[in-house]
Image (cartoon, rainbow, N blue to C red; front, side, top):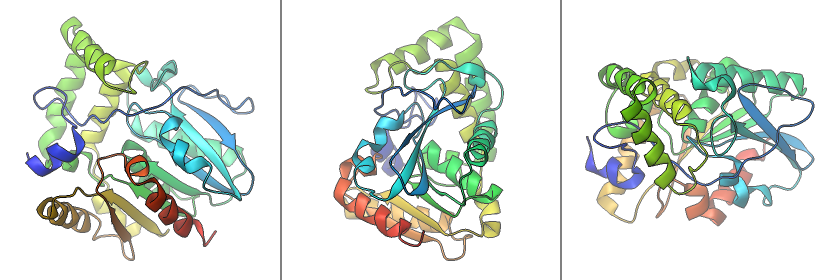
Length: 283
């Protein structure tokens, strides 16, 4: 495991328990016209459509610094059920990532969105890429996420997938595992109210997902904003990892922002918002 990646993300759950970044949030109500067992959506503003997807165990509050900086945009704030205070619905068991991507796509279709931009942070970045590969969106911004979830810890889906499967079973099917994960959630700022089963399912799916081989067939513009720290050596290594991971997507734009931890849009609010506005200019 690479110490650089450990230091900047704190994605460990105990000794190798997985990729866990838990950040701020607050629950939001679902739009009355859209009913879903997997997600809730709140719409703010008027104009061209932008889907905003937060990360693991986070709610739409991670985008608070973004919402007021995008005039002329209609923002669709996604929240995964089971994260940040929302009841889990059907997310508590079974596959999670692909069904979530499918449900967000269903929402966009029912809402009549025409090639919306998609911006996703962390796990939300993985979902944004899945939507970009699925079609029906106009452009994709990924915030501090690699196309392989396990790579965020210096591993691979093949190498960590089995471990993630076993950890998921431990966290969801043993009393000790459930207590341990619930305690981690309770002590992590912003994670309160997140369902341990949904988190375990998300960790399992992230560790087993590698979109890298599929990137060459993504036809929509892709921009990746990633966090770098103040240490120059670490910044160089992080940049190398991101460039290598996204090399398969022709024309992808990679933008380092720092000094920052994982939550770039909070740590570098003004610079991130400027980058986001520029990213959205073509639509």
